[in-house]
Length: 341
Figure 1 (tube, rainbow, N blue to C red):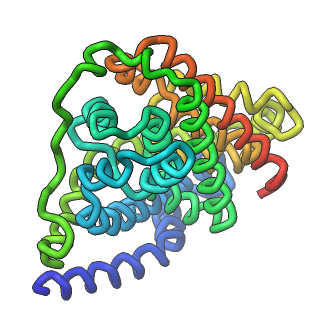
Figure 2 (cartoon, one colour):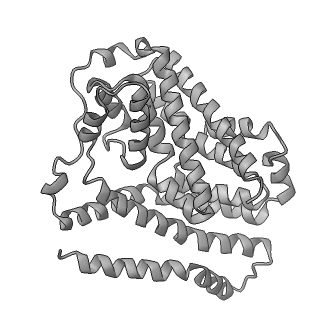
C-alpha cells in the first residue's frame, strides 16, 4: 500500500481547501479592489468561487469512480445485461449506467457490443440514457450545490426516464430500424482493462483512479471554466425579473421550451451545472432548468449525429421523442415538488 499515505494526505488537503473556498474567494475579491455589491464584482466572485469548487468536486468523484470502475469492466457489464428480460433488464441497465462509463473508444462500438452480446435493444437504450444523464459526476455536483433532496429526486426521476423510455422502445420492436451493417456485424468493441476484480492490487486501483482524473478532468476542465464564466455573466448582469418571466414556474410553456433550447447545445453535467445554478439565482424555476440540463446532456445534437451511424432516422426520432417527453415530466415534477429553492 505504498500509495495509501499520499492518498490520505491528498484527502486531508482536499477537505481543508474545499472548506475554505468561500473565504479565499472573498479575500481574492478584496485584493482585486472590487466590491461584491457591484455587478462585475458579483460576477467575479461567482467565478473565482465556483471554478475551484466544481473542479474539486469533479476531481474527487472521478477519482473514486475510477477506483470503482476497476471492479466493473465494459465486458462484465455486457455479460450482466445479456439475456435479461424487458423490465428487469431495463432497471438493471439503468442502475448500471450510474456507475459504468461509456467505452473509451466511443459510444457506437459499445452500442454494437451490447447488441452483439444479446442485450435487447430497449435494455441497451436504458443504459445509454442513464449513463450520461444520471452519472456519478452529475449526482455529486447536484448534491454539493443543492443538497441531497434535489440529488435524490433527480436520480429517481432520471432512472425512471431511462427505464420507461427503454421499455417503450423495446415494446415497439424497432430492431428493424438499426442500420443493416449493425445487424450483421460479428465483432464487438473490446476495450477496458481485463485486469479487474481480485487480481488488481490497491496500488494499481489508486493509480487507475489518478489516470481517470487525468483523462476525464483533462477533457472537461475547459467546459467547466466556460460554463462557470457564462454562469457568472448571468449571475452578475441578467436581471432577476427577466429570467423569472421566461423560466419561472408560472410559465407552463417554459419546460418544453427549455427542452427544445437544450437540444442544439453541447455540454456535460460539469459544464452546464454552473449555468443551472446561476439561472436559479436569477429566479428561474428548478424544474425548468433541470429539464434544460437533461436535454443538453441526453439529447444533444452531437449525440444524435453519432447515433445516426447505427440507427435509422425513424428510431432516432422515436428515441428523441420518448426521452424528451420523459424529461418534460421531470421538469414539471421538480417544479411541483420544489416551487422554491
